[in-house]
Image (cartoon, rainbow, N blue to C red; front, top):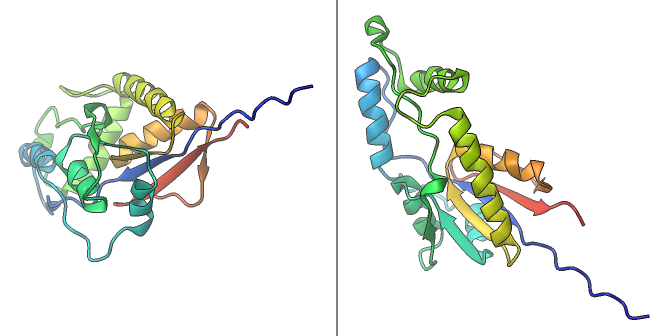
Amino acid sequence: MIDMEKRQLPGTISLIRHGESSCSPLKKADARQYAAWLDDYDRKGIQLPEEMASESREALLQADVLISSDLKRAVESAAYLHPQANVQRDSRLREVRIPSPAFSFFGCRMGTNRWNVIMRLAWIAGYSGKEESFKQAKCRSQSIAQHLAALASSGNVAVVGHGFFNRMIAKELRKNGWQPVGKHGDGNWACSVYEWAIK
């Protein structure tokens, strides 16, 4: 009887969050100022860290395929972690944009971090304004998770993306048989690694 060859397992998928943005949060902003700050946040790059994010850098060095969101903060993060790498840019990895407030909130002024929480909750509840809806973002995360899994069939994949959308991708990966390896985090430069769980 001839022994069958062992089926080759897929490589790993590493989801990396970009570095800290060079767009500083505002302590006080009204609805109009907050909307302008959201635009500024997407235009700007990153602040270079004092120490190299070693785990994220290692993931890029070990990757056979490197992909980043095409937003400036992700592109600059990938270049910082691995300056010599040929990194593919994919707009499907962009962060799920937080919608701007639909009205003035009666002139209410608060920090942009608090605005982010309120408007993200509003987005989850169904308000998307002119931005991508929750349903659309979920479909996008399903599509990109399938794409990453297909790429991983040929080797290790590293993705430099964004906090919220990386979590959406991770959820879809777990649904489809991928499991987290080691410690995970949501902060800037955090790296979450997934491997194929079905042996």
